[in-house]
Image (tube, rainbow, N blue to C red; front, side):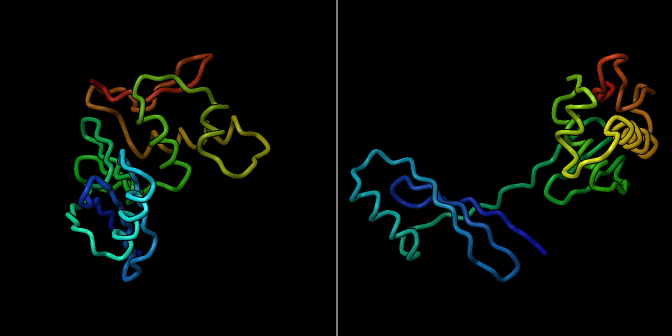
Length: 163
């Protein structure tokens, strides 16, 4: 399913975001930041809903995390290294995003498990270690020749972009 995000600035200071899914124009979100009275706000909301307000449409770029030769496209759930797609499962992708959002921050196995896994596993430490091992094999080393995911002995793991 293709999803597009639009940012709209509506006349008189109303900001309006609309998510359109392949042929489904429902799901409007209206964000107000107006110092007017309650009646003025209600009138602006009704105009925005009716579509009679002046609207300026801009397409927002998708969110991307870039570190040296790796691109992580969050909305598309895809990872590229030097332009070549790296196929990851859900846990691998979510773990990579969790660590790559804050390069250099050390995360424990328990923190990673809580952030990435939605289901319970008997031995979460082994599940995290196995996932990191698979992710390291798929990503390879950063430009400095060290793994993108570095072990901090006795503490946890951190994303090392190699800069």
